[in-house]
Amino acid sequence: MIEFLIAAAPQGSGLMGFVPIIGMIAIFWFLLIRPQMKRQKEHQAKVAGLKKGDQVVTAGGLIGKVVKVDENYADIELAQGVRVKAVKATIGDIIPPGGTAAND
Image (cartoon, rainbow, N blue to C red):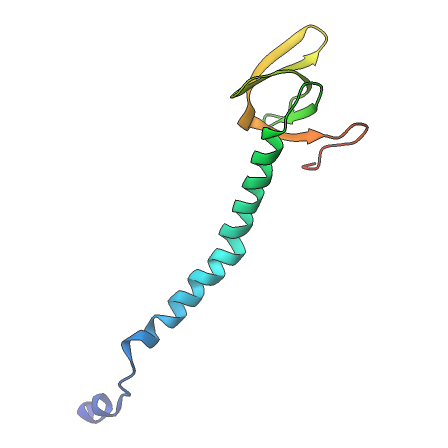
């Protein structure tokens, strides 16, 4: 009886077994990886356009005004006379004048 079941099993192409795996990879790519890459590019563009006088929110939640911008760093004034140097990549968002941060 077992020989009958083994003999009756369809002999499909080996490539057909990969179709579901390829489909899952494509779904994973379009639902997770691609949107993350888009957000990363948008963030890099914001950080590249950072200029003196911009109101920013850091990744740590500090809100301040940019007083100086270097290649990799930005000096941020948190309060009058209180300045910190932050890595530009840690700047989470730029607050438009009279507005709130988009990441809230």
